[in-house]
Length: 564
Image (cartoon, rainbow, N blue to C red; front, side, top):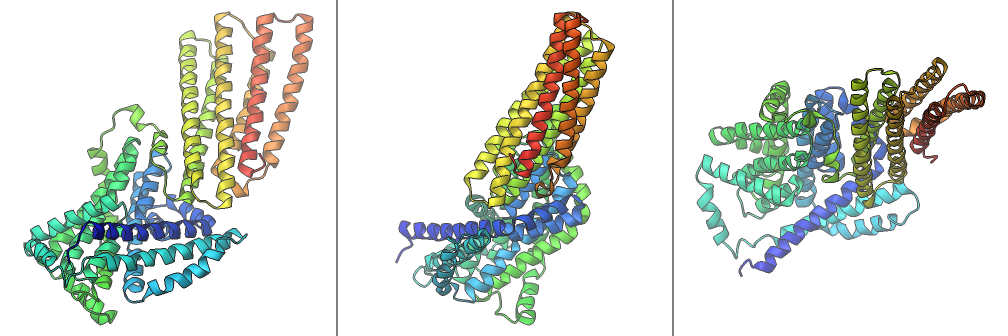
């Protein structure tokens, strides 16, 4: 009996079944633990040691080290994490990804979990139709869990039958007895497998299955697992391609960390009995079969995978500052635009995890708010600037910022729309709708400031001068709007669930009252003929525009609280 094309399709299908189950299980647990996940993520900016813990916990929850590392790269690109902090998350993600290997080894090979798949589906599927979201999400997790291990069972049956296909062992035997070269060859195989599958957890499960079936020996599987550690860095490297120089450096740190770790482990496997230590742990401490037997291989590989990643993190965490320096030297900046915070990455790389994606979108909207606050300062400076050359530079800068606001609105709105296409919790869905409304308001504020800069340009070109009273009124109004914007930016950075409307309403009311008093004074002055038509028009444009900015800032807070 030969292993033909249909058998290859069955193997790929079984692997797809496993990955699909992992995806559903991951999404279910993320939605059930939405707020807890956000609290974990808020820890990550403290230091690299907390970063390791954060990376570990997030990877355990989302069951994907690639998602955690892409998240770290995205946050660095958005200017929310330093390189040192992102390195901690990536180290933790490498430990977190070993959990799947243990789940597969203990439940997939020791327990006949496939026999439990249908009863689990019988419990999980009705839960999907429940009204309570929490119950629905737990149902998703149970269904995903059942499909994952059903897929693993199919994977075990889909691998070649060794008794009837001994030539496979002969083929591998030609490559398995070359010492260091063998290790390097199978590391390359593991790397390519993970790049193709795009999941180190799935390639780890496949390696454990091949070992359990007797197709590959334990030593070869260990080398393949080291390759899978390198393969998983490719996702972060791809995520960093359209991003800024800081994000590229973050991805490079992850690659260096895994490559250096694999290098020292290869040397240890080749020249010292590391795998015999794994055997001692398996047989003497855990009291399971020897990893050199097909029955004991899956647990042996889980021990090796976890031990390697723990050791690597314990060693490399002390060299994080050095890795940061090396990455900075290796990835050179191409100038100011490369250094600048920008959002282009979100149109090409959408986070696989909705809760993390929601948090990233929120952080980027907060950055958008800060940009608008800068525009307020620039227009305010333009109001009092006497020098024509400096005024021209300010107007050009405001125009540039207005172009950036247009681009950010399109990028963030596109990103939010893509995230919204996937499954997410009701709370995240409300938050996404709020953010869509917020970016629209922020972009309109950018337009208003640009129009104000054009009005001030007309004022300068027409040699129109304001009275001291007019200047004071507009300056005072800018000050009040600045307070509105400060409150808005604070709200955008905070946990949306804790924000109240009270302060925003007080600031907005004060601004409206002040604008009404200015308007009354203005009409009286026009009737008296205190100033000409040009002066009156530009002055009215400015105070009316600032009042509109105030309206949009309160709309933003309404979007945050869900009252929009």
